[in-house]
Length: 243
Image (cartoon, rainbow, N blue to C red):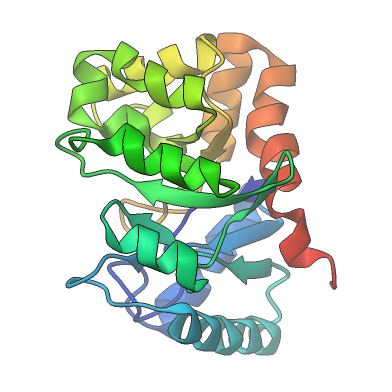
């Protein structure tokens, strides 16, 4: 399986605290059947002021540590970018690491606040799409506005935005309403990928296997493979082309 959203790079955001935890998370990922993983540290101005250079340096250190530990996990890096006007500056300045490509466009993992869809969000996503950058909306099933009314996502889907559902949301970790919303997105074909959004070794681990089994039961093996393997790989394969 391919994990395209997680916080395994150590000491760079609210994910792995240090290299020991980052390596422990990698071992859990491998045990779960994850072969390729794109680390997506937060880019959230004023909270996690990461930039391309900091992310690339952290990735280089992580790859070296994985090799030394003999952990057979292929890793790359992009970012989970917080919604805000800074996105426009980053997009024009080329400082936002993209998740990959889809239909000839770059893919940006875009995070809305958990509490709401920001006012005017469609304008920003439309602005990005006009510049051949497709927003992939991270964990929409955990956004309160979308949980209360899944149709709030429709405008973004119609624009061409992609979506990423959290594996542990499908298995009930975030509560029943979030689980039902995640299932709705799967059953209505509004989900493009499932990812772990792993943060730590206690309650936010890199686990896709249980979610894949859940989707298999819910919508069939073909859908489960598309969401956990085929479509994620289609997006991020370019990160691993040299390897």
